[in-house]
Image (cartoon, rainbow, N blue to C red; front, side, top):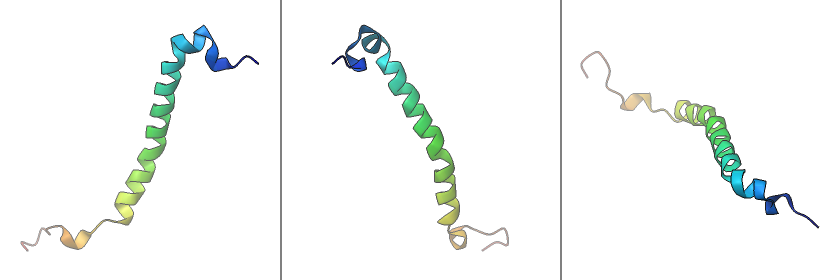
Amino acid sequence: MHEPFDTQAWADHGHELSAALHQLFVKIGEPFRKLSDIEFDAPWQKSSSTGR
């Protein structure tokens, strides 16, 4: 049985697919990171503009 990852095309361009998948997961993770930052924000630890 011939596997697609055994071909010369995979050897030549497999790293491009890996890089594209990495970028996809990074892009998917950005909104979740922002939501996490919002959910776990601690506004009481920030200095206020009233001089406290």
